[in-house]
Image 1: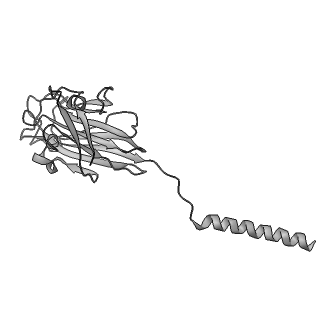
Image 2: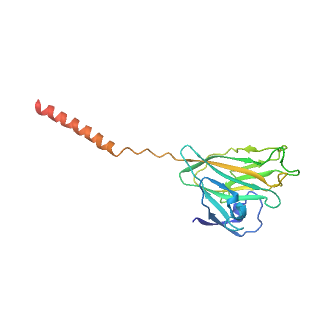
Image 3: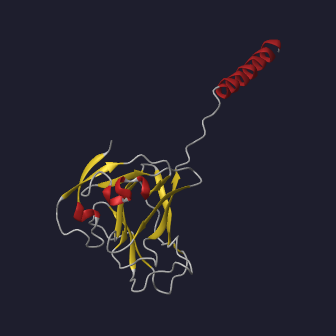
Length: 220
């Protein structure tokens, strides 16, 4: 199990959600390409491993790209943010990401009155580099349905990256706002190994050619 000490301030450096410099433990979470927040303890990403700990998910990859998804919900003031860490394995590349915010919004369940801009942030887990992206998520316009945000960023190599959704005032008319994050990861295309018999086949052809030349030489 992966366990790495990381300051809570580093995890949340993009926004001020924790004022304490307490140490947070990264807790490796079993991941099969899709994770629903309801699977987490207390149904909250922030409760994985304990209130001071952060869940880390190793993303899956394929040469054509693999869409890793995370679904959840949040609202203020009871659950104003969700935080977790994604791990891109060495040799893999995180090529793109998007979020569908308000998966449960509709004309009958619009964004709550008084909601303010929410942030979706991706950053290196060191917390010392600028955010890879920091996207404002709703409510630029009245929201009566889901909206997809796709930030632009350069492809990222292997490493650990903090994910944060929150730091706003938001709620649906009937409670929490659902969302779905997607992270696309490509695997390096390795050289296709030759069939084991192919080198032997080639050596056999060379051997036949050598024998043919030898016979012609002996006959002359």
